[in-house]
Image (cartoon, rainbow, N blue to C red; front, side, top):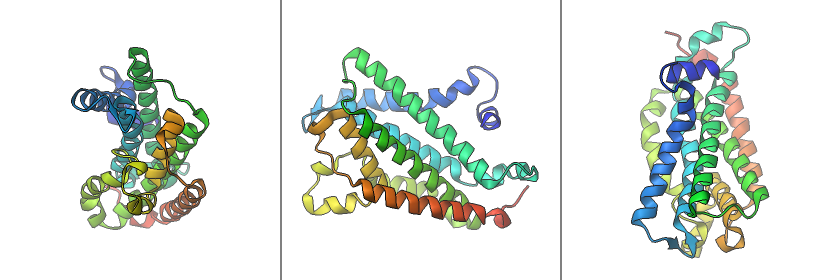
Length: 242
């Protein structure tokens, strides 16, 4: 992780603090913009809190996905060391993005609470559970797409398209309770939607009218994690070291 920080951000200026600074600028900028141009409340919930609880998990998802593409090829020279494996490479990259997103979320939430745009979370337990599921989901998908991008160049080319087309199904822009009932089941198939619903219930309490299935989240995350581990353990033969 330390090597990844030095490689990505260098030792000049604020260096490793960009791990926190980059997601803070993104989340805070979007939160400020949406607070200005949108109504102060939507469906009875404060707009600033809606944006923050949606964009922090979204930032975690997009950054993990973006850094997973060709991650093994970029760090292929490290595989000559016995202690370094493809799993350690992708875990280090994902952990860096996850830690940065969570720290940025804490910073933005503290600032919004201090300025009176948000209230402190009501139920910390379900909020932490949603964040835990989101970190597992992001790590699993990083493993899957990191491996698939080494196996096929098509995955690498289509990654940016996939990340944009999947935005409506992340749950960052809306809550399940706001859409027609007949479409809710389809939205809840996305693990990210369930995770963000938990986070928003932790923030707003029963006022959020959150919809999620903890058993489904456990099952789908374990499945994705097993798939990710299997692909990562078998990807070494596809890695081309320059």
